[in-house]
Length: 76
Image (cartoon, rainbow, N blue to C red; front, side, top):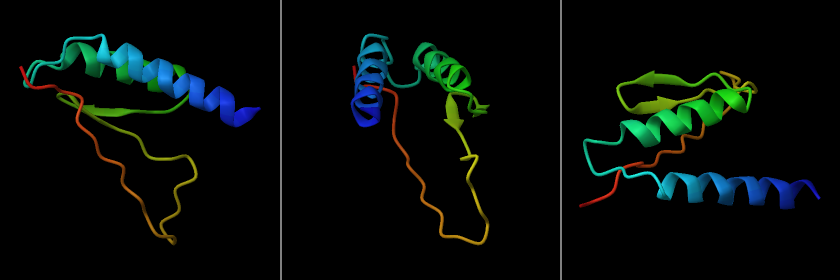
């Protein structure tokens, strides 16, 4: 049942993000939304401008690291 809830939550977040106008160089509102979502999810997002990142609470310097990178903006 956990995978269904995670999937539904992910789809809901993406729907909300798509509904927020985020033309290139004007993505503050979608960045605000994502930052708050991450905080509400008990994560500790860091932010520089509209760039947001989180470090997994399971991060271990001795293990390989995976970076997931995506854009929040859209083209006019």
